[in-house]
Length: 168
View 1 (cartoon, rainbow, N blue to C red):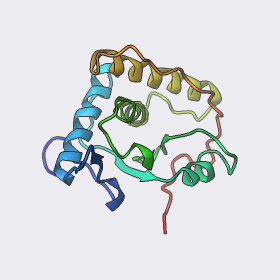
View 2 (view 1 turned 90 degrees about the vertical axis):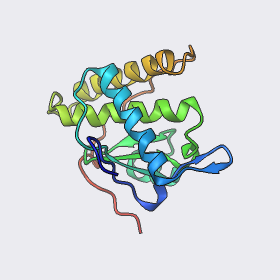
View 3 (view 1 turned 120 degrees about the vertical axis):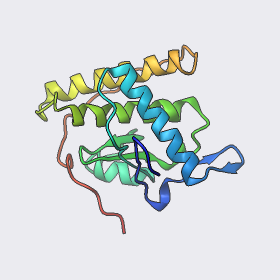
């Protein structure tokens, strides 16, 4: 894709919408729109590129985000230009999936802004508060719904932050 925002995706990134597979171009267009929402609602500038978006199974999140402990994580931005979403949300038709992408894109924008230079627990909590706030505004303003998301506990474990995970 060319233009002001160009995305990169792996082969797992093509989404399924209802009963019809999205083309790569359609999927990338959705990513640009959701990144634009995250930028608009957070106030961070819109970057020239979208991050990679990869769909992974639940065990991936348990291993890479939760240190091998069972958890409920369904999305993760790794501070290395990759957003991971649970493969259950490959169907972007649902409001939760698009809101989840806006949340993770907010983390991408936070990282690109340089406003959060620390991996401290305090910065981690502030990043999450802001991302949930943006996600909830997206749900209310873009989806015209009032079923907002309640923030989950932040573990402040950054063992894998800034690393791209290699999948075999």
